[in-house]
Image (cartoon, rainbow, N blue to C red):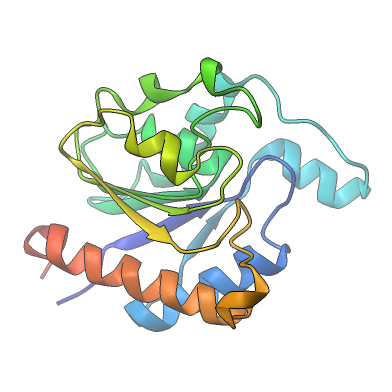
Length: 200
């Protein structure tokens, strides 16, 4: 049985050269025995070419960019780190999208939970996994647990991790350990939730 293609988009400030994303893509690729396909938005491509920081464009312009990457697929998984995951949630209506995975979903801007982004999760048409650090400044465990999320969303918490999945020293884990844990949890969830939909 062939695994569905797994697309991974970056966050707002760092592309796929970022240590976390590089290691995450490698770990998920090992778990799935299939290479992760990176999604790099055009503003980040320009940033990497020019070596000059560029802010993301208007959010709505990123959705068709991601869609362009997957529109030729019969079936796939769309994923992303932070902003990339938020974009992925807006593709759930596409017929080829079978699941969504968000690594560090930005539930709200740092320090502004009153400006939450729960609406992005309200009408998902496919199963969605959010892997979140308990200390994430864009959506910590205490705040998220007080919210009512749709039944097709699962959250896996990483103890002591922040938005970049760095954990406190007392947990005796380095970033590689945490990423491996995240990759294993991702694959386990995918097998349990969408294996029956995978292409023979």
